[in-house]
Length: 196
Length: 89
Image (cartoon, rainbow over all chains, first blue to last red; front, side, top):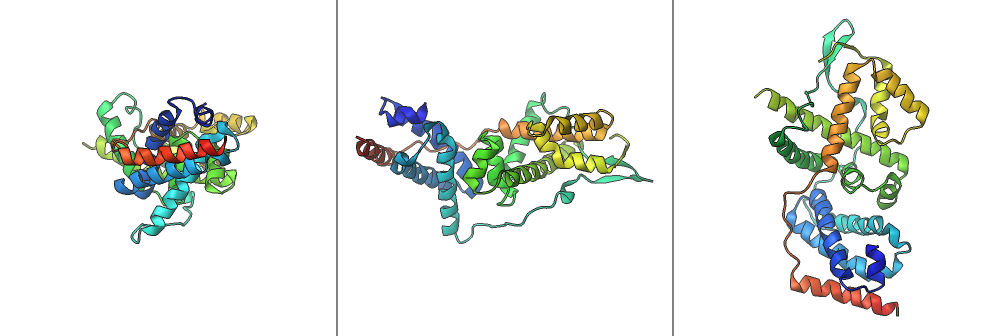
């Protein structure tokens, strides 16, 4: 609807489109690039590219993955230009993400926090959002875009695979590991909270 | 935390939990997971912590306020939009 209105030159369509995507691209870029100024620039550059290439959009219903593909490329360009951009690309093994255990004779306890208070405790929720932001930034580069596209932008596995130029199986694998890494960091924060 | 014998089945479930939460597994695989976790409190606890992690991601909203779009930036975008519309006439 948003894209079709834009193509039809409907009144107000331009402003609605810019408002909708500018904040989303900014959020994606901010968590990807780590710098506010870079994120602002990426949002502007990506939107400009979107309008320049809009005639190439084949299916207006699929405008979100199409825009995020352009945003992803704008982020990569920005990071390549930055001499000090951190870059890590190694895969993380699943075994390394299994929670620690302790116990004797094969009887073990999983060392995880009590997550049951989370939905009710507003202060804790706010702390967890802050921790989540840092945990996302700490994710290796391979994993961060998958979380941002799948869990934050709610794009499908297929759309995410197309944006990132990887197979759907790779998206599923990286998404799971990214979630496990975030879970581990949030769990550590909860345990600190329990110790207070 | 519950006493728990860490079985190979727990590890298999650990590997599939995201696909289970995303309803991306075949029905028989879902049934096998549900059959296992109903008698495995640590697996339930772990799955719940992962589900809440995903919920936090889905409800995340940035605290960083974006700068308003400057007139210059808006004009640049609008010019590109007008050009695109013109090319379609």
